[in-house]
Image (cartoon, one colour):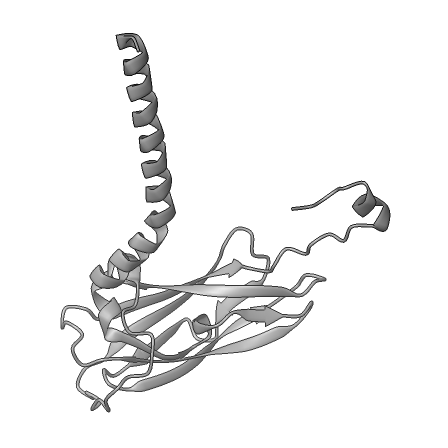
Length: 193
């Protein structure tokens, strides 16, 4: 084997290895980023999405403003808004509110809300006890629904934070309908996969 063939083979091997590594990195990037955001609180990922394990005493000497925002992803046609755009809470106090969703289309759809908290430092101190974002939200054509949210801001919220913004982005995750093959298409070997 000549030196040129060895260099070509070495180059091809490195290119294939690089391609495999880049594909693997691209495949793992989303889960790794999600874990990174949960650990660091970056991008307002809430660390505690479940029930608060202990009873927390309310602090009536401090008030925190919680602003509620609703945003639709560009592909989501629903009307989506908070029942109350701003709520004043005492740290340790459970608060209940709702977000309203309306499906104006002529088809059933499924939505999923993704939360974000700002400032990101407050994410670890905002506990969503019950949230519509924990589950997918199916709405029939023309259906409107109040989607509940129960949350608490804990007493450990740093004193310099007086306002927390809890924003939800609503995405359309309706499964794509699979076309049905006619018998003639099936016999001709057509496939939609």
